[in-house]
Amino acid sequence: MYQVQRESQSFWVPLRGCRYHVRQWGTPTPGATPLVLAHGWMDVAASWQFMVDAFSEAFAQQRPIIAMDWRGYGLTESPPTDSYWFPDYLADLDALLDALYPDQSIDLVGHSMGGNVVMMYAGTRPERIRRLVNLEGFGMPATRPAQAPGRMGQWLDELKAQRGGSNDLKPYADAAGVASRLMKTNQRLGQDKATWLAQHWAQPGSDGQWRILGDAAHKVVNPYLFHVDEALEMYRRIAAPVLAVEASDDSLGMWWKGKYTLAEFHERLQAVPVLEKATIQDAGHMLHHDQPQTLAAMIEKFTR
Image (tube, rainbow, N blue to C red; front, side, top):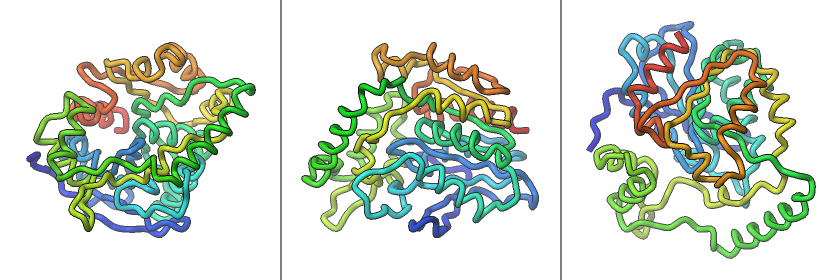
């Protein structure tokens, strides 16, 4: 199994009706700028462990490093809901920063869904962010008003499916089964990392079956359309320098099959006032798993 270099400590913060789980690494120097890590869809805070282990000793010991499990993920409570709303992630992040770092700017890193959250948050609360790192947080394809009735109908249909239990996540017989699933999704993920991550990504239930620590309600589509013009207005208000990091594998192209491309995402990024772009070679969407040393070095350099 993967040998952790820097152990995290867990604590819980009551936020907006949820008991939020937060991991913290190291003993920070008072007054140092916090580094806050926001995970992606169907992931957990522990997913950052490999990257945190790759930070230099001077960097890791100098500042607070925390990662939270979003609502309905990991060890954070799942609220009583049948679907999740994107603005709640921004509100949770805002409440968390108010609770832990009031009147202090932070460095903020987000991956995938978390990357989308941090971009929107930085445009809404520009004064709170000193440096911003977006790891493959591409946003969504452009939409047209004509799609609205179909999207609302899709949402209603998926809520019905949710009530019927057809959205339930597949259980696994043991942790080894979870690890195999992780390696199937990401073929670059080694057995040692997968074995370690499986024990944080899932837990056994009373029946002995291992279940993913993610609420199935996250699978329900958002009933409202993504509006590119609104996203660009958020981007334009970001005051912090932004580092946008992509993997050499084009995950966007694989997901959307030409409906939304990297070229379109790069065009949107032109709205960001201060932008630096980088690509990590030999990596897929889970670049913090595939190349943690390279990514850690990038973040250290950018946030120094």
